[in-house]
Image (cartoon, rainbow, N blue to C red; front, top):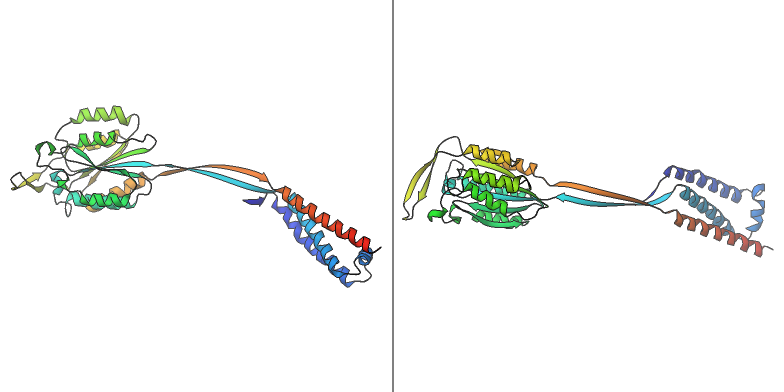
Length: 333
């Protein structure tokens, strides 16, 4: 970027322009102007030389003023550092997520809000982990939010075959360990968003799991966990089919809310309770705001003097002026 460090000197150009115009008009219109009598004799054969003469004087003065105004070229080098975030969406797909206290059901409501959450992402990588009695990777970390939304649409309670006994239940703690183990980039912020409506009722004991995560991850890499409990303040029912395809109505009535609060507290995250779709949407809006990518700009500025080019221009105008003056003197002898 070209600029002048002392731009106030440039105002001198205005009176000089008027002075040169005045001198030229005076010389042209006044025959007995004593101060320029010798110039009249030099340029008596051509009025064009007089115009060139004054134009050169004007350019010389302007060049000199530009030099004292300290022309410089300012270079600004900006290095932008963005604190990218890896977001692991851990989604409960156990049979209880078919409950209809959130319309059309808990899982569908969660998927709808997650889809809107993906629309707000720009540079964060997103990963889906689904779990029931065992966690599975539904989609690895990626930047393609359109693909993520398409995969999300296909997730149902049947994504995991829960007719198999060892895949039944709600293995929250296994899902958290599985998700934490799949973070690979140490230079990126790490966030787990856990959506569940139940309690850890199979596999790893909660206390063992918390100690493991706290020791291996939370103290060192600080994986932040947001826990979202999807539940209305009432008991609800869900129809579950057994291996003979018979339907059984099961009441869902208990969750381990304290454990979800404890997870969020120990991992510098936050606990939320979603009783309806509007609340769930607000929760993801808050998470989106909390996990905005931070931008750091490292600016380096260098200033290079550009007076040399005006010095060359000034020298060129002086040379032309002297050449014309000398040439006219020779022809007039």
